[in-house]
Image 1 (spheres, helix red, strand yellow):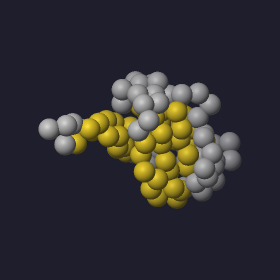
Image 2 (tube, rainbow, N blue to C red):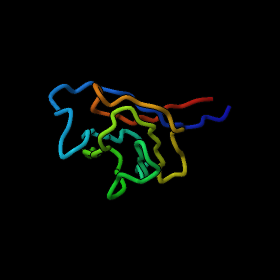
Image 3 (cartoon, rainbow, N blue to C red):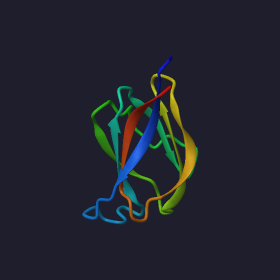
Image 4 (cartoon, rainbow, N blue to C red):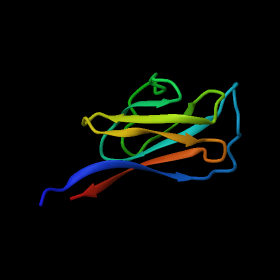
Length: 102
């Protein structure tokens, strides 16, 4: 049996963060995987990360004015999270976690 590591994200609602800052929604991205996040997009196909996000680290990212956006992630090990719609109006923290599948 071959185990394949895949990446998923979970959401923690953090009500203490402001809904908007500097003209857009600011979210916290936390990498709880074993591989650096090298690409994060929200709404447009542009990398919103200034630098790779190392495992165990967090970064605040301004995702722009829209709160319902399509998000996508790429990791240094070649894995990625398929693009999907997400609503940041209430959820301000994304935690990326590794999961194992058969």
